[in-house]
Length: 195
Image (cartoon, rainbow, N blue to C red):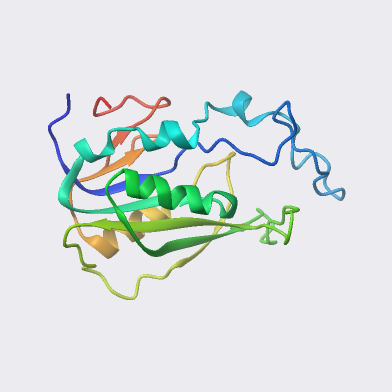
């Protein structure tokens, strides 16, 4: 088992979405002006997802230093669950670290139909454990970046995390690629640790 401890945990959990039909297909119509923008392919066919309970039971505390900060991506519909998961991993919710304002390649705002309002952002929550303080200042919360493949987050967020917290031991959980300066764990990369 891994004995290395990290002071920065960066996680993009593979959320299992609700609000879908019984077959995991979005029941509401998406944008009619761009019918190919959103497919009716169930998310499970794109990548493996995990339930809230599965996420809560991951042994993340074995990876964390006594003083550690967690950056966790979530959608607005998963917000209460993200805070529950954060607690189960040993962190206290502190704030919203980043808000990703998604852009199309054309520069237009991404807009999805939502139950209440049109969607076009994702949240990266910040949780803390022990005594942690930012080392960098004037780090902007708003990230305006073009979206790429499904669920891939802007690379600049990793840079902002390091600017905010400094050169501390860090790991990206549920990673899709190896990034210099970061250890990684996930089912789409060669992991640096066992979990």
